[in-house]
Length: 181
Image 1 (tube, one colour):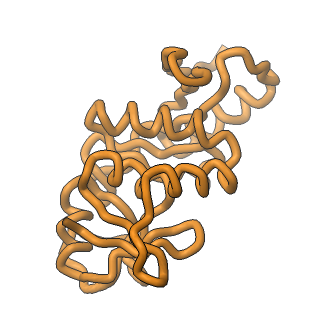
Image 2 (spheres, rainbow, N blue to C red; image 1 turned 135 degrees about the horizontal axis):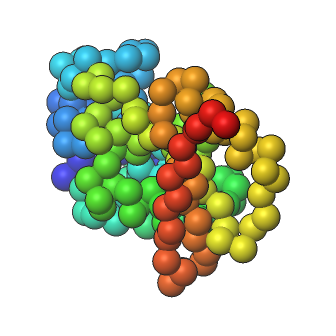
């Protein structure tokens, strides 16, 4: 079992061999100090975000400990994420769904979206999709859609709205394509 230490809003896998295995198994995390790794041949600890940490914990791929060496439960990681990540429940629901469908899901922050989504993985391709997560009953300003569409078009990515709600609300994915009038 791969062991990680929870440090603030991140979990770190310090065992470098375990870090390489975990990264190779689905491009989880980011090797510390390596901005754009080429494959899993790196020699560094692996930093995981709370969404990734929770996902891996729930799937039995990771054990998480605090700084004193005490085991951290799925519920504790979830509570921490809920406390510090706005709209965590919706984000995690979409993250988990996309991962379960076989996609590689990374932060989309640099593109102004929630997720950048890959079909194969970073370093193998550019992310073809940007995903923005919203509540199904949330209103959106049409100008925001235009801005997101123009940005995604300029970086050659498809813009997807993921609409959902709490618990059993299904996720609806809407692919928006930019077109010229």
